[in-house]
Image (tube, rainbow, N blue to C red; front, side, top):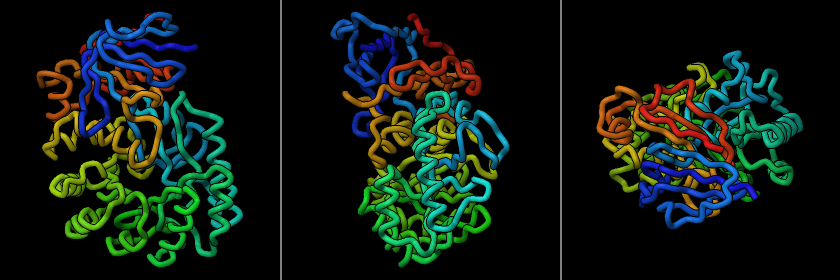
Length: 387
């Protein structure tokens, strides 16, 4: 039995909008799953195989990037960059979700080829986890000519995601909706491109097509890169029960508009975060943390709520077993503290002022994967692995 005990936690962020901060100074995980948390005196901490002294920093569920475009391993030809996933881990992100492996050179667009690549991508990230990061990949872009059997074949092979609707040849809502419904029938979750064109072959996807297509996730509701007009963003928030995905690689003003509209409609539980990288704007290792700080500061949202957009909301919208402090969930955590010399009375206060926190450690499946971040500003205090 592998047993992780994290002591001397300053505060525990839960990932849950309804109760974003939990009481407790200790957490126990067994065999990579959360077992218990609370006051150390009330927990069974004996027999730990790994011990961490948090030294008063904050523990949160590992962050989740809901929108990436991986290719193979820890390499992206889009930016000719190695180890971008490892860099993202140093930004507190422990789970990545593909919106399509669209940057693969020579990406096949015939039905047999696109199915083969999706299955292969699902397999290679299942078999190889760069720096321990969980990469949910194998997200085919739908093309004309696909039939219901193709979606069944994909699901039977383990594919659970569709790439962004609109990045392939299917550009009309009626055809896209039929394919999305076939995907949903076989347990495959769908995302749609929203806004102006991003890469060659993509096109404008406006609010009418988003609504008609009815995907599970409204990909980059704030544009990737170019956003829709304000009235269309408001219309999507009013009309849809899908997740509202706000990304770093989009329009910041539109991001705040979407957040404010969601709050007014009592739909904050539908807000999730992504980076939409690697892309033309590059790789953003701190993209999720930057979105949390930006939305808290400019969207007038308490920082503990903004953190939920980056973990718990995504976990719930995408039916993941991580991103929440809950018994039985994966023991994936980020330990972080207020950055040195940053204004604010606490880490959360500093983030609410728009400042990045310092990441001191990441843990995935109960295993310490990184310690002091090489990418965030240095934290005031650092957790310490004792054994």
